[in-house]
Length: 69
Figure 1 (cartoon, rainbow, N blue to C red):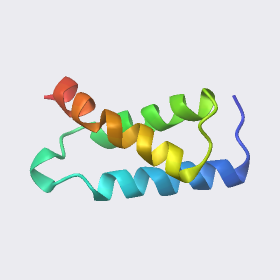
Figure 2 (cartoon, rainbow, N blue to C red):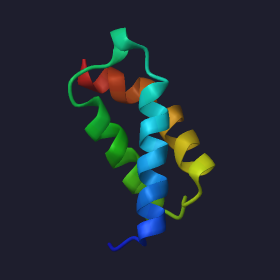
Figure 3 (cartoon, rainbow, N blue to C red):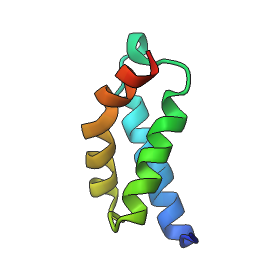
Figure 4 (cartoon, rainbow, N blue to C red):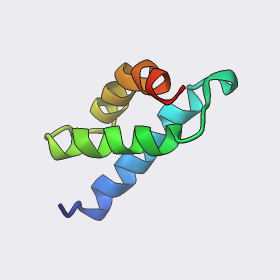
């Protein structure tokens, strides 16, 4: 799937925002890649706003951390 450069930038910003909200003690190996995948999946399903992407990823962060630990 191809994304516009604007959407790619929005996804990057959302990823950085979500990662900045993760406490250091919860930051596990592979977390950033898994959050990025979550954001890509959300975009593929029509969530293209910054706020929407941040919300989707934030809602999944604890599940992702649990899967990686």
